[in-house]
Image 1: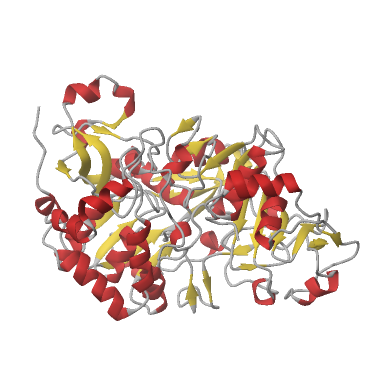
Image 2 (image 1 turned 30 degrees about the vertical axis):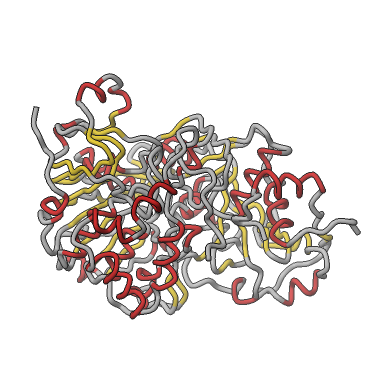
Length: 322
Length: 256
């Protein structure tokens, strides 16, 4: 069996400027944050992001100036902050290009790519401006092969003239980076809890990089193969990154960190405060180990650890933090 | 007059919960819909099936989630998978009875904007988070419940972007657009409960919250609101308030 384990810094360095990429997770859980911070430290530019409901993973990348264009359905940390602050500012200031879809539409696009199909139909979007309008112009689309030449297409069913569907273009990215609970050196991957669209995102990418809380023996994951959602041969690199999703949650491992999220959100709309956040938590540290010290070290991390009965921290205080 | 007090958030959560019938499949979002769904499950609808779009079905929440992708939605769930399973196999096939929606602007036909403010969405004055699953829920749930802040500017004549289609231009325009079922059933706002006329699909005032009048609600609505026959919104029962405060949200995550 192969040993696909490489260092996080080496993995992030594989992503060039201008790359097309998607990150796993959903709003407040299982984003590959440690990988994201590495991309910011590497000062990657002009990235093309594809996602359904990202949260602070995209927000900080956008704020740090790493992103050129996004295709998405939603960008926020939900109840922690209902609009991604740097996303909102970047759009309003014209600093970013984007296209709006819905979650179902984006997941269907990943699914089409994952199946090797050019497009897939859905019954959603009819009557909406998600269908009727587009944020990217025909010229922008035509000029850049990273974006589909057409946002979507309405088609009458060839089997029933009274039925119609919306066809959505497949997504193919150069990279997918997903953060999971367990992986093996060989690339067998175990998701615990919700899988979000990580499987589809991984399978429509040329290169899949997995960051994992734990590296375990192949035999351990093969005892229950029905719980492993990605075949090992689709995974190119594996990185061992404990607390790799902080400040977001990882089911069965740790909860989100309301204090860190508050620190981010409190300053994110102010240029100086946002720069201070980047300076302290991203540029000011050399690696993820140092980051975990700066956010509060073992004491903070222990306070977030999941209760095995729940898979999260049932007594975690989420509101009215001083 | 009741000899106990309740807050506006509690009134809205209770009103939202009462829209859910026992045994129904409920597509819930973050915030008030979670309060309502959890209350319904702990009171009159113990067999309602709460689905979160990030991948869980039939959650039996022990703690309020901060997001639909929160580890807390795993509690007591019957199945856990991903977005594709929920959207493709459950929502698209018409298996969701009721979905919850909200937004920054809502028009008289229950069309909702949660994308941006400004005439040209490519150069918006204010940008929001975007559809998420809202457009899909609006298109494919059997009916929807809309939660709204009731202000004149939030109920304008026309909205800047139709993120979530309601009854579109009214009448049979929704079906003509290609939506074969569904549509908004009720708006639960901070001032009122509004429903939709059977044929025209235009909104009307069903009830105004205690302390307000039908005219006061109409005055705070940007389009002309049909107030004929409106009554007062029924208030929460003591039992509902107890469940909300002590069981659903003792931490006061969303309750005010």
